[in-house]
Image 1 (tube, rainbow, N blue to C red):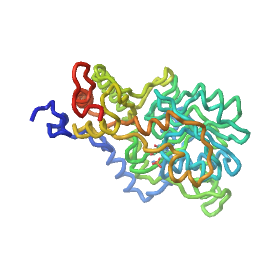
Image 2 (cartoon, protein in one colour):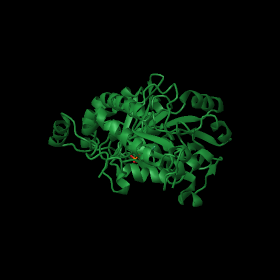
Image 3 (cartoon, helix red, strand yellow):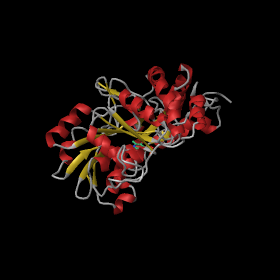
Length: 403
Ligand SMILES: Cc1ncc(COP(=O)(O)O)c(C=O)c1O
């Protein structure tokens, strides 16, 4: 069967081989994990955890790190350490993983949803001021896919209206804004090490800050309310146990060492992919603002212009997947449209861009950009093939186009 016939219609898939698997072990990883397991301390008191906390925080331009059990817990810890609670409001983007909003709700505060920008998929920095009220205590930008939100504009509003900036950097290990790394620009930065993330221990997260008081408070909350040097059974804060285990920290250590090479690899392959899409009309990939000087491309969101591409987002996803490229539809709802927020108190500004993104947007996983240039080019070729089959023709109509 001809390679030009869509796989969806019985043709050969353009991409036959799987993309590189993720997560993946690197050299030295197993030795580090074994060394930890050979010690008699497998929990959070192992030196490996503290060593990783310091390395990760310093790499991200912050002074202190508190490694925890997930990105969700790091966000909840941020709310508690920053003293956010009932009566407070926290501004969040209309699109993110649900934890960005539930951390606010679970602290007893009210999330206020703001639209995203069409081109960057990040919170619309020009709309944030409209969401501010007397009750605003913090703003949580998400650096979507590893492209930094406009930290200059956001920091200006936060400073002017006197509230905290808490960076949700779950997608942004190693990303930079004019040379400062993600998580190091706000009062607090949080990261996830969940399975799909660019650094992962299966699960895990970290809270980073350069504020000594915030760090001490967060460390105590994450460690059952203990204070350093004050004994194991003496508790000062209403804390909990969020501690990361030692094998997780050992696994993450090597990944931090490899992170920059992997970011460079993804950047180079992503550029080739973009070049490969130059002839394809109607596919708009996420744009990075000038300040986003290092983009990690953890996932790459994009948008389909149905009229120009010749098919809508769902048909695009179906056809490109059939060609062997694991594209996925964007979030099916804005955060506030989730059933959860029918019941939970919240405010939402009008979010037409975010609502549209549920219907016209998609994302590509980072594995497409973690192999060779050819791997990345195959993804572009698959999209081009689908476009050729669907694209609106001027001279004659093609049955089934723009379905
Ligand atoms: C933007 C964002 N924030 C927070 C989280 C929560 O991280 P975790 O899954 O480690 O709890 C995620 C995870 O998927 C995320 O994508």
